[in-house]
Image (cartoon, rainbow over all chains, first blue to last red):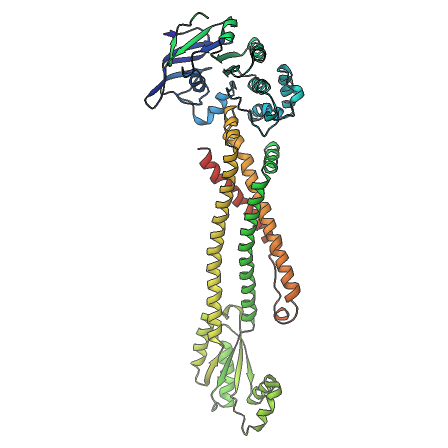
Length: 228
Length: 291
C-alpha cells in the first residue's frame, strides 16, 4: 500500500529499515502534507518509533529515500544534520529531559543550540511554558515533576523553536486521561499555529477522538486503517 | 563566546569532584616537571658560575730563563681563548700556599728550598670554558717547550659536564613523559565527564545542537582546568622554593650561590602550556566520543 499526496513536507519512497535479518519497516511509501496532523498507529514493534527516528536521522534507512522539506536524507552531510533536526520538535516516549537542568534550561537549550540571540530566549521560553501551564515550575528540576508535568515540559521543548514539524512518540502513553487530553490540546494548538504534527500512538481513545488522517503500520508495512 | 564560557563555568561547578581531581592531578604533574626544570636551571647556573672561575695553571720548566718566561707569556696571550696569563713567581706561589694551609703553614718553615715552580695562571674567555676547549688549549699549551705541566681539574670538569648533559637529556625525557601523562589524565577525566553526561549530549544533538556547540564548553573546561592546575602546581613549587631559600639559603652554599625561581614570563608560559595541555586532553577525548 502507498499513500502519496500533493504539497508534502515529508516524502518516503520505498523505505526499508532492517536490523540485521529483521525488517522493521518494509517498502514504505508515504507523503505527509504541510500543516497536517497525522496519527501513526500500530501495535508495539510495528515500526512507529523507527519511522519517526528515520525522519530526524536518528537512524539511517537501509533502502529507499526520504525527503524532508526538500532535504534528501540519504545525501545530507553530517555537518548539516543539526540543521535538519531544527526543523523538528521531538517529544520522546521517555521525555528525554536533562535531569540536572531546570525546566527553563531544558526548554531554552533548543534555542541556545540553534544560536538564537540570548536576549530573545527568556521571553520565548516563558511564553511556551505558559501555554503548557508550566511557567510557575520553570525553576524545578525534572525529577521533581510528575509524569504529566514532564511530558508538558517535553511538549514545550518541542514547540519552543517554532519547528515546521512536531514528532510525538506515544505522547500520552504513560498519562491518565485528563493529562493525555491536555497534551493533545497543546499539540492541537501548535498544529493550529502552522506546524505539521505526527503522533505515533496506539492509544485507541486518542485515535477515536482524532478527526484526521490515521496511518496504520503492521509488521513494518502500511496497512489500511482499521475503523476505530 | 560568552555563553560558551558561562556554560563551561557552570559545567565545572556541576562536576566539582571530577574537576578537582583533574586540577590536582595537573597541578602535581606540572609541579614535578617544573621542579625538575628548576633544578636543571639552577644546576646550570652553578656550572656557569664555576666555569667563570676556571683557571688553568701552567707550570714552567725549572730551567727556563727570564727571556723564555717573557716569551712564554706573550705566546700564551696570543692563543685564542686565553684572556690573560698572570705570572706567579716561586715566592708568590709559596705565599699562596701558606695562605691556603692556614694553621699548618708552619710546616713550610722547615723547607730548605722552595720546591714550587714558576707558573702562569691563565684565565679564559667565556667561550673557552667548556670541557673540550679546555682540553684542546691544555694540549696546545703543553706543547710549548718552556712548559712543564698544565693543570685545570680536567676530571671534575668532564664529569660535571657529563652530569649536566645527562640532566638535560633526562629533563627532555621527563618533560615529554609528563606532557603525555597530563594529556592522558585530562583526556580521561574529560571522558569520564562525557560518559556521565552522554545522555545530555545525546539530547543536545537530537534538539539540533552542532558538534561545535557541544565541544566548545568542553575545550574551555579543559583550558581552565589546565591553567588552574599549572597555576596551583607552580604556586606549590614556589612555596617549596621559598621555604628552602629561607631556611637553607643563608650561609654555606647560599653565600656562594643564589638559587633562583622561574622568571615571570616563564611562569606565564608554563600556565599557558597547562592550558594547551588541557585543551589537547579535551580535544582527544571529544574526538573519540563524538565519532
